Structure formats: C-alpha cells, structure tokens
Image 1 (spheres, rainbow, N blue to C red):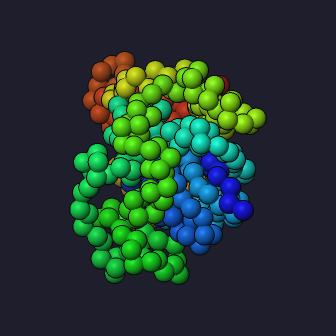
Image 2 (cartoon, rainbow, N blue to C red):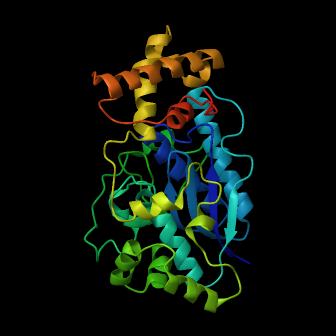
Image 3 (tube, helix red, strand yellow):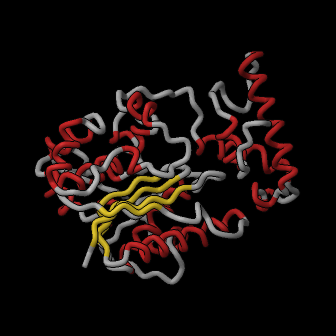
Length: 329
C-alpha cells in the first residue's frame, strides 16, 4: 500500500551540491529513483546542505536508497571523494490526511523562501513551486530539449527513460514531466488557493487546528519538516517569510564556485584534478585560515577581495571546504 511520505537527506559537515550541474543531477537521481520504485513523485526542493522530497511509495526507504546511491556515485566520481554522502540516517515523516499533506507540500515548495534565498517561492529555481498550475499562472514556457546524445552526462548509468521525459538545457529533467502535477493540483483545488498557500505564514493556528481535527497524528510544522537540517532556526524562517532576502550574503554555491574555480586550480599541477577532497585535511585547514583572513580583511579594512563584498560565515566556509566546523578555532 502506498504511503504519502516526506523524505529529507541532510549533511552537516559538507555540502551536497557544489554547483548548478550538481543540483540538476540531484533532481534527476530523485526522478529515476521514483520511476524505478514505481513511486509517485509529488514535490521536491534542493538546498546546498539538504534535499526535501514528497512522494507516495510502497517502499520509501528503497526510494531514498536508490536516490542517495545514484547521486553519491556521481558526486564521488566527480570530486574524487569516497564514502557515504550525507548523514547516516535520513529523515522520514509519514503524512496522513489532506491538511497534513498540504502543509508538507507547502513547506517543500517554499524551500528557497524559508532559507532566505528568494523573495517568493517562485523565485527559487531548485524547488517544485513552478511546476504546478503552469498554464493558469502564465508559466507555460517552451523548453529547448537537450539532445539525446548529451543526456547521459546528467543521468545515472544504464538508465533508459520514457520518451515523454524531457531534459532542459541545464541537464535537468523537467519537473512538470516527473511530478504528478495533476494529483497535486487536485489537492490545492485551484490556482488561486495554490498562490494563497505559497504566501501564507507557516504554522498558523487555523492550519494547526485543521490538522488536529483531521486525525490523531501530530500536525506538520516547520520543526517537523526541517528536523535534522543544519543551522535551522524557525525564528529566521519566519523573518524570511516576509520576503526579506539578504542579497549581500554569499550562497554556498557561490562560495563553492569561488573555491573550486578560482582557488583550487592554483594548488594543483593539473587543474582538472583540483578538488577539495584531493587535499589532505591539514591543507584544507590551512586554506580555511587563509580564506577567512582574506574575508576579514575585506570586512574590516574594506579591501576588494575574492568575496566581492558579500558576507560569509565560518561554519559556511568550513562546510564548503568539507571540514567539521569547530567554533573554538
């Protein structure tokens, strides 16, 4: 019997996605895992340190295993890394009832907003908010499909996909082809209600009461959805829901791009071999100190630097260098 589940894989000491291609492949691995386990994919959202998804599945653990396994092989090969990617245990929340399901879908679709990376859910490209009610919301864009000869670069090996699965120029399968948009749109009833749900405040008392009346399971809340996510603080989330984006903050993808494309090539004889994972821990620690001092010089001496005037945190720099953050440093 299919269960409706929310799944989340997190990583505390390193990022899961270092650039846009990683994000595209990450979605494709989820899509292939849903296809091969005969699961119904409902929604998803990818951040640098975690990946949320909603699905109906007979075997959600197999769905997550195949998703993680395929992406880990890709990531480890690309970055010369070994071992399990992400925390040992993933988070699984079984959802029962219409109001519980809508609450979970809302949280997954609003990832960019909740983490302060977008002013609206629709402004964050790495979640499924833009996959629903496309015609009614004026988002029926004709995508140029990537040629079949190039698709294999962005897919797990030995995978044959149905012909109706299109792939955009970025290498990502189109969410509107992968997700069961018709089913999700039935849950939201109308485009107007969908837009309302995307803009409402999280954990409103009315929503919690509706969930409590529906059944005896605990209401789906920010805390239950974001359980185990690094650096999660619901106070910041509620501020971000007002659309207050800090555009002066460097994102993890931007910082990883700076490290991978500008810093590391100077440390390797063959730039193609450049990877933070190819550096011993001692060199990563030294690089951390050098970059942090450069950042402080920019902040306090107002000198131009690699960071382009944007702010970063010590914990962020540590995870982009694949180091456990030590607050006593």
